[in-house]
Image 1 (spheres, rainbow, N blue to C red):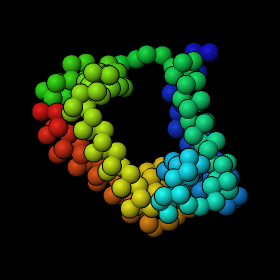
Image 2 (cartoon, one colour):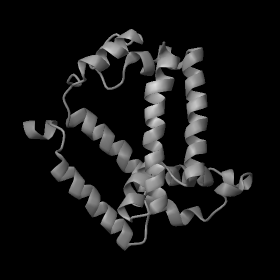
Image 3 (cartoon, rainbow, N blue to C red):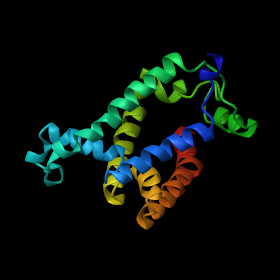
Image 4 (cartoon, helix red, strand yellow):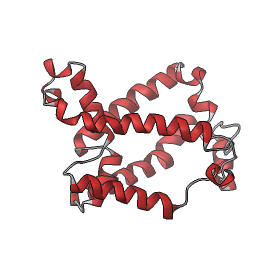
Length: 186
């Protein structure tokens, strides 16, 4: 049982992801979280006011199993298949985060300075959520999909636009963490 509490090695999880991707390609399906959100909005009636959400959502119901699986799988993995451990961070990263006000850097995946209710419900936290949510939504729509859709489905099916999008995601992440993150939290 102890081996189940360790992270799965790449040679187990990688082939499982590949097997799922080959299955989806074989059945002519694509994977991506943003398409699930679009389906949920269409089910909720957003297609009555916004043309983007007006489509035959019933044909996409199979894709909602991805959302359900992510929620159930995340719960099972956290509750039953993991043990709380410190995160191995470079000492320089811990020092940099400490200078930005993170007190327990490397001791939790979700630092209280970002994920506690006090942080989220503060003016700064709300501003980050609203602006970040808008940018993620705009970026997903502009790029024609989300990071999971492009990085997993798009790259698996050798799509050039997905390669360009994934390169853009990495560049955006580097800009965020090296330029914007210190400005926001200094």
